[in-house]
Image 1: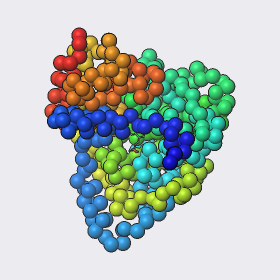
Image 2 (image 1 turned 45 degrees about the vertical axis):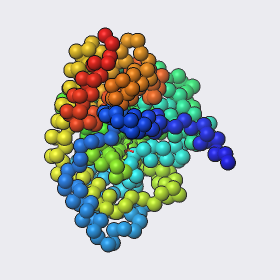
Image 3 (image 1 turned 135 degrees about the vertical axis):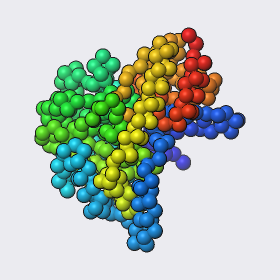
Length: 386
Ligand SMILES: Cc1ncc(COP(=O)(O)O)c(C=O)c1O
């Protein structure tokens, strides 16, 4: 039996391979501290769990949740974008998603034919690289560099590439670098994509995990953005609901409708209790996010303090769940990752999985209890040669 070339050519996700090695080490008795994937350890507000339970108790809530989602959940998405970003969404400009990863990948089925080009950042979230492989598309990378605050220089993208491109991906607050964007930068991105008739896909799952007063803008705040841009958003990180799989695509009507058509052939929507909980998350009391973000900030500062003491270069993230730092001298990213996993039983992510520019960098996810994070940093310091 032989799988399709598509499946044969697709490399396994790094985190899937890593989980196997962690399971082996744990079976041997190792106490692994996991700081790799960005899966929030902090629970959602208890109110949301109560809404979910109440809804699950309702015998009318177990049938299909609808391809387009329930009207009250759709309205909650409209209300959220209005309240949070001052963006007015029309009902035809939104689509609920089963987590944003699903939407990011399926957007390629809706937009990328064989041979079509997608422009993606280097480094970037791996799905932007692998999803085009599923549809026969191609990718070209553009640089995100520390000296530009991890923002691309659109003028450096070759004209031929810009003319050929069908889509371009951005993600701020950025995974893995922690870079953040301004509205002025988004306006530049919109101008560039409009000039070359490119669909701008902005992936924004971290827009409500921010620090030091940073308010992450939506790309849709740029006047006219909806003509060329679609934004992917998620309740995974903002509302600590990663396992429940709920997100949204909003913006450019043509793109949203194409994605909706593809999805009607792939899935059957979100469970109604999840939609009820998500609607409550988006429109109910938001005050619990403040102490929750303060915990992430405390963890961020702990990491920066230890790495600073070790004279390791870091960047100060004003958003997101990650610390991005230079691999200590003498190691490649993968070597340092393996060294920490095998010798210190700490699992952090090597930067090369995000692209060539990620080589020489490492990513710590701020998703372990603060005391465990302290323990991890002490172990990291101990096994890192000076
Ligand atoms: C940039 C980015 N996009 C999308 C996702 C997927 O999030 P979800 O599918 O849980 O909404 C992640 C998760 O880590 C991410 O970092």
